[in-house]
Length: 318
Image 1: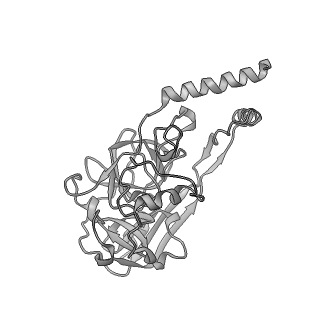
Image 2: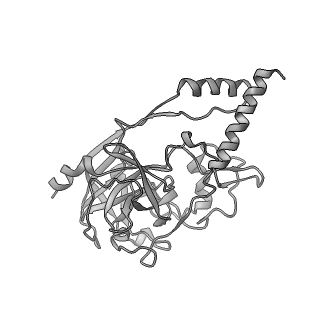
Image 3: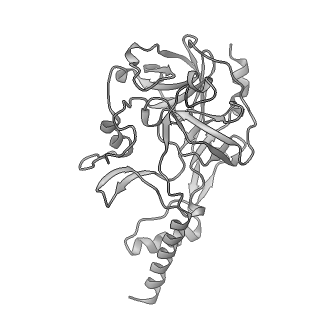
């Protein structure tokens, strides 16, 4: 083995050791949200799940759905038996939060041409039958803005990836991210006012590093869940901030609340750049797992849009 290749392998080994030292060594940690787990009732009553009308009467278990959420090809893939909530029904696509009795904020990427063929349900608890629960249709899209994060590779990252390719190792992810034009938020007017809506305060300029926050929503389309408490981490643009709270697909559009005051401070729009679901080689099954991280490669666990860019629309709506 030549000296150059040996040096590259040594570098890769060093990166792995660094990643192991910086690993958070944790898995997704959700728990059911109800009056016993949340201090503020509006976190329950005002948090909605978006469901395709064709799925309302279905009883699809997470065990039957989870692989299709993460992989296009599910053949020969088995779910690990210890995946949480595996026996619960999972049929939602996104989360949202009521700002007024008939006004929902959600992620922009949750709103497409089929939005009028979907229904919102609020405070959907495990065991609820959506076919018997009152749902709310969208009357109009008041506002939608969806612009992607621009990502790229530095010269150093490109150099490393070329060497990784030569020895048959997969590439490292992009290490340059531009959030300046990133937008992902929508406001929807419902056909009727939601029963049980509770008014609450919105903090339009919520950021200070270390503020304690809690994410509420419907991860993977499950019933209402909350995360363990986390903190605000960084303000990446005037409208976008990050936290160390882990979220999943289905949390998109769900509210981020201030733990102490109960104020709404943002909506969840992405789960960061690191998957926490994948193959456990030793167990030969797919599930949630601790993931190794190199500090500069992991910008955050979750991303959130503040409500500042839609403030005018909120106050102008009836």
